[in-house]
Amino acid sequence: MFNMVLDSMKLFLRGQLFRDNTTVLTLWLLGFVITVALIIGLVLYVSLWLGALLGGLLGGALMPYLFRNLKYN
Picture 1 (tube, one colour):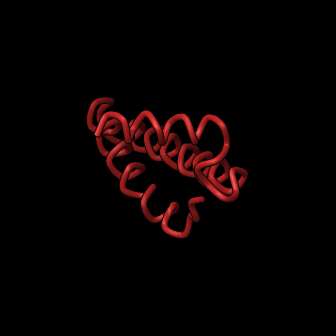
Picture 2 (tube, helix red, strand yellow):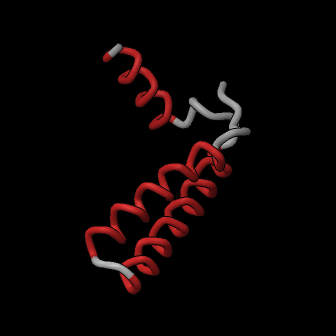
């Protein structure tokens, strides 16, 4: 299992894991921006720890939706 993770990391760092690396980075950046906006917005209305927890949870739940159509090599 650990070897599979290492092999995937090596392929990703070499740019050979996904067919279109630009799409992967764009979707990751979009998810990051949405998560940060959620955290900041929630922290303004609820406490710091609850805003961070809910924002991280919602942002993490968004990632599989964003990455659903990625193509691997």
